[in-house]
Image (cartoon, rainbow over all chains, first blue to last red):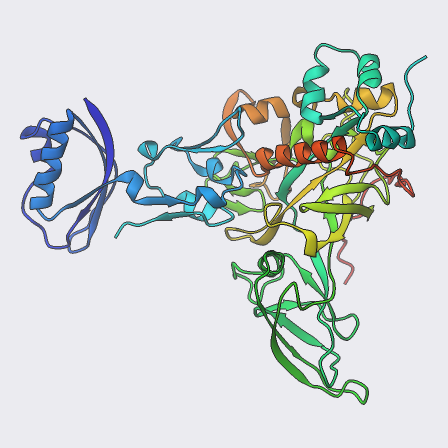
Length: 136
Length: 383
């Protein structure tokens, strides 16, 4: 079983297809919606965690592609310039999801994208502007 | 008879490559097993370090004269206003200065880019005088073209600082970072047991003329800093609780490194600058040994509610708890986060330790000790 977090981007025109329902019922993927920003007539975003065997996850992603839903693993949506980071900790102050924490031994920032809920608070909290989220 | 040594004796050992130099973290760990007397016997110098946002920073710069010459009266560098109210082509770049109030680019960025060797747009105007006839200039400058680049920071290396929390239901954007509502987080800004002024809290060895690590090169303590306050209450370990003494630091910015000087922007607060500094502390006697043994659990500070109008003090926290990631306030657990980089502070203390051990950095005795102050004035509205 593999758990991975994705950012789903829905086109503005409604497909009429109950994507999330089908992922669960047809593919038997355990779905956890972490964040949703869906309005009629607008590009919609879901941050969704999917748990299933790797092969099934691949099938689910293929299904979404056929439905014109972009499905990108979360770590490819968030860029963090580790090379420029000074490990001050300001981003870890706002990350209530626990994706950004300070390692107690090395005093370095640890970034775990799989815990990210795409709240975007780190974008403004970082004093050096090292985070970027590309929601498309 | 407890061990006593002078700075000159220590320097003699440094010259011979025989000085025993440890970082403040190493001595704090050693202090768990050894007594102050043993540490005074064994250790000659303890190095400290800090790398955090320090707003009261800036750089004096001299551009060199144009032909014909000009008495620059309004100056901008990359459109950021810089202070021109000194001599003709002298200026002061203040770290927090911006062209417009909400700009995210300011003096700090100009300073970092100058240190990095980038070209900067200089624009200036003047009324013109008989001796300085030129009335405007627009050109590029960089660290190779200018005469002096003197980093002079009126307030750095704060001795302790408070913890910030937010009791309100709204997000607070402050110089202590973004404070989540309803005590969602607690931020702090210090390098704890590595912090310069927490390792010599009465400043027996730190004064005017103390040689330091500053921005990647050698610098000096120029004076006490602004808001210098030795009147703060101390805890049972002799550590002031809350922000106390400060230092004014000076050094040659042309020799500095952007690893230790970084421009920053705090959301809805403004531009500031991360400054890296480290001070070597001579272990002159048992009293100094006792001071440099200080551990995070022995250093405390006030927890201040930045949501309340009067910035109420809600309690106290020690730095062991703060660095652990969680403190408890009135029975409630609050997640903590630093704003000051312990990782870079460690690098500074270690770099200074290596420089002294290798005989490349000698200590100085202060030329003048700091005078104690009873407290600070507030600004009353008298009009």
